Length: 373
Image (tube, rainbow, N blue to C red; front, side, top):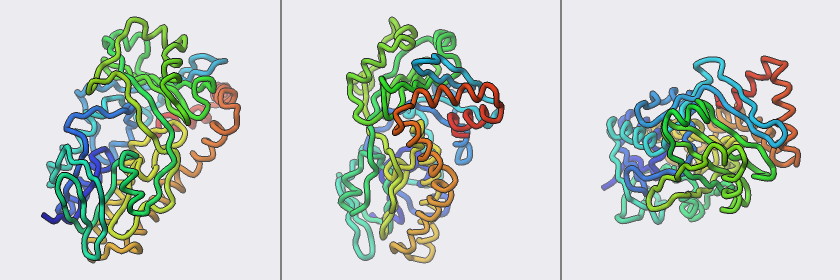
């Protein structure tokens, strides 16, 4: 069976692209390698800006986030509160959020197949072959595989983003216990002895706290050391890790930089697969969905005129550069270098926080940076 568009990857980027392309009347197939309800290694922070694409789901073990806590070796917990609705966000399992988005895409006409692991993508003169448990055909393909599909990009001659490592576990706690110990706040730890190129975190959901660490060269010993960090050890004493798919602790690669050319004839790459994540806190859901929106719109235009050439799809990259890189990531990369490549990460965060206590506008800028508002 031949489709107008096959999207490989059922995360936020892929599901958003599928929804938009299907709404425009295209025959869309969304392929997800995991089974429905698979666990996704992600802290689960959902900025309120995601409402630009769809309403944020409720009743799925989410917790409304109304502030944050920065922790450094010198200063300890430094709390801040959001100033309005635009700065708020939510924490929830990506399992629930992703399934919600896929269901929306299916409801507007996308066909969805779970458990379909793509092994190879081949570009032909008039179509694209997608090979896995069966061979599928389409006019165009969007890769939304995260970094798990790096082999597909390499086989197509498309750059793969540089990666860092993330490790995470979920701890079960009562809702009241979480409220008392963590509040409705995301906790970010900046400590070069924990992670020199990256951060550690505790993100509270309704009855679960996601605890993790990311950075270059992060290994299990770094994660175990973070669990013994005094503040974390105090809050998690006696709490048990939740088992998903037979595992308590999960790891995943995370992109560290956007790639230069996320397209070629009949193919576009979106989300983490093209490196759209913010390089400061490595939140990437909103950026991934924005890239999915752009790719779906460019596909729809290309489909209308029957032109899926390299030149035609280059307009996707133009949108990324204008609305994501120039307006956002370009400045985030500069802050990234200052934080993670200067050797004085802790001192920078401490100084910035002290300044914000005396300058309300600076405080709002810090809140915006940490809430992605």
